[in-house]
Image (cartoon, rainbow, N blue to C red):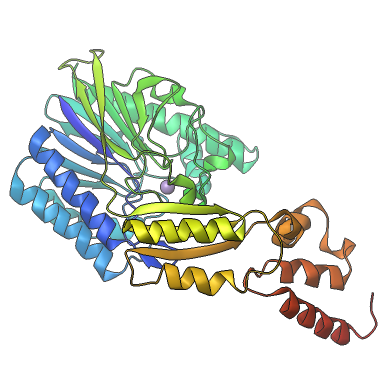
Length: 404
Ligand SMILES: [Mn+2]
């Protein structure tokens, strides 16, 4: 049997205020073409379809248009959509009956009985386990006679083991000797996270990650949540498809892909996984260095004519950036092929200023004087000149009226 596995579309996501609809359209057109060529038995979307719980009409239209194209095409056996932590389970579930008529299954809210997660597929079965929060997992633990009175994290971990264990048993029974598949949206131990904050909430169940052993014996586990495509613990059968788009400049250097999975007709057969790299109609470029390096890189980017979103990051050099900022803006205008989305002053002399939150983590704010807090906070404002910073600080001093 053949599967196409993808996840973490984050439809409706913006990159520092830049709309990404065009990139999502390119991805969905690519995915449709891939389905036409590969003709999979199922297309599995392992959660975080949308970026937010109340996606805008453009994001929703993109989603439904893709489903319509997929169904009209007839090249895909079955579509399975799983809810991730970014999704609203009720929003995904609302058109469930309509989608069922189109051979699409939505697994949005984890059913109380884990056996009901099993979805029969021709000659196989799939345990589809949507994202579950700590409380939900602790409730599952209690319902399944596990967990006791320990801390929430422990009860959630016990719930995860019991719930997924029972779901896998049900899928195994439903598969009748055919391949046993699972889908989940969670962080598993042994998997690598990107540096990106858009994986927020990946601490599932109060643990850094759940053990992958719960899926032992599965023929393939289609995971979502982490944005780097990867086989967990070197096992080709347990895999994150990763996000199709780089969700931040931190993810820009990593390749993005969709997994094409081929399995034998019986449980325990061989597995072969291919990665199809997703298109990048717009490059994400970081321009780093001293102010003059950043400006030179911006000019080179503009001259290349490449479609790009750029983040300027000043990491060395002296002086304020009041001359650099308008020069960058003129070089990479918002309507040009290469657009400047972000400017960061990350020079060491600003390091203390960039880290008010970091300072506050290391020691209570009460340990600092009000003037020190004001200095740290003003240091975070990359667009202020040193002169402006000095004037603000003078006003703070006046307001403090002689406090240190
Ligand atoms: Mn997620």
